[in-house]
Amino acid sequence: MADRTASRSGSVGSAIVNALLLYGINAWPGWQVLPFLTGDMPRTLDLINASLITGIIVNLVCAVIHSRALLALGNLVVMGVGVAAMLRLWDVFPFDFGTGWSGWAVLVRVLLVVGIVGSVIGAIVELVNLFRALAGLEPRAR
Image 1 (cartoon, rainbow, N blue to C red):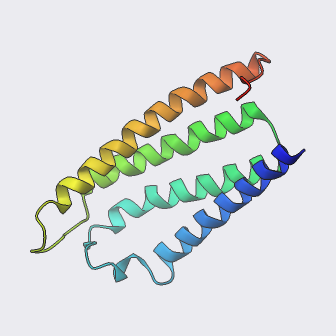
Image 2: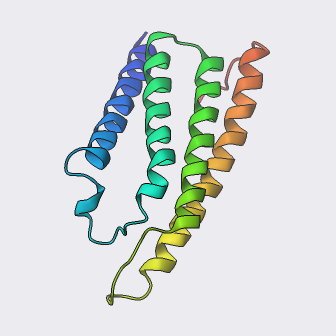
């Protein structure tokens, strides 16, 4: 029972964080307050917003319906939209770090690669979790 309560509160907490990010990016204070973001940022917002909204929906559904298969499927969808958003950020690259340290652009690209690779690995894990849940196999004890 404690596991289920912790899982639900974690899902609700994640949904709240995503909602706050969605509000912060689009309403107040807005992405425009960050001096390193360029006027190309709106070209990426559709996928960034879709990723956050997908995360909100999946987390709220999983807080209400406790199902390993549903959680794995939801995580797959969230990671897929997240990878699409990171690929769009890579393509548009709406960052301008000015005349400061010249390594910022490389660092951001490296972090995007880490995020994409990590999401792909996570998607593989969730795919295995989905098949295990559908087959009725219990996860290993930790």
